[in-house]
Length: 119
Image 1 (cartoon, rainbow, N blue to C red):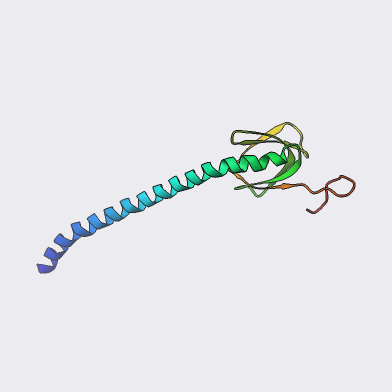
Image 2: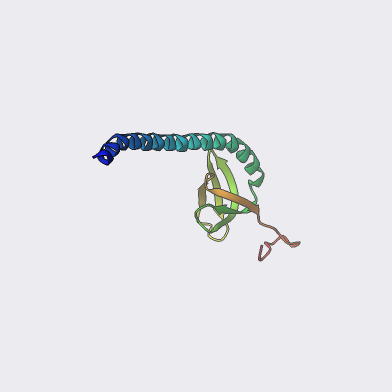
């Protein structure tokens, strides 16, 4: 009888603490996403200015989520998009979101002006 009374009094307390903990956890996740968005906004202007040096040059662009590098000539920047005309398959320009770009490398050329193999 005494054990049941203890459970009856402590169970609502445990539930209240657990619910409060869940709300704090969600609030922490929301704060982290706000911080990440603010950092991205600050970094976009710097990234756009640094990408302007690659316009008109042949580059290899690594895209997050896909283990493939897009190789082509960077034609321009429009807001958050990068226009690239592929060199291997020059069907038309490709638009790549800069949120998914992880790295851009200028394709190295040898002394004859051709692409180096094995870069």
